[in-house]
Length: 276
Image (cartoon, rainbow, N blue to C red):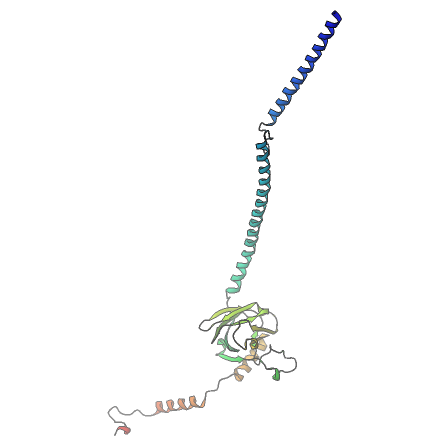
């Protein structure tokens, strides 16, 4: 009996020890879970979920975080795009100002557009002016370019700063020479202004690039850039070639006016012969 009693006592003590260990382990686990739900320094994200509701909240939070991150990246990309536009705009405005502001010019040329030819005038050269027309196919000479060469090209000196005044007499035209980077609209009743400075000798071609009627394609521009001595020589020849001779009617009228001015004035009290 004594041995049986001792055995039962030992079994009960062992069981009690096991239960005690399990209770202490459970309390430690609960303590660990309670500690995990507390906010911690420099914590990122939400606290661990302890309920199904919080699990769904955490899932939605993570999904929205991805969406918001993508939106943030997109907005930053737009801001970067705007900064790129600003960087481009600054030199663009400087270039527009450089193109639009005419520096102190050495000479002035007036360009007048008609349907479908150009008139050029040199106001600084006693009003020297002439018309520039397309050379027809049947009149082309060897080496001349079809639809580009003209009978009287505009001649300018190399290195000179040239003010160009552009106007029109009918519909809207556009004086455009690609190699010069010059394009100016020719509008009736309006005088537009641009400038150019040709740095190399040669012949440069352009076109009217504003649709101006049925012969719009037959309105070329030819500009011949020459050295200053050659330009002075051309000026002397052009003034003779394009000199406008007074018409006989004008000469007769001038003669009559001169004769009347040279004649004796009649007395104030003398009646004209035709009224006697």
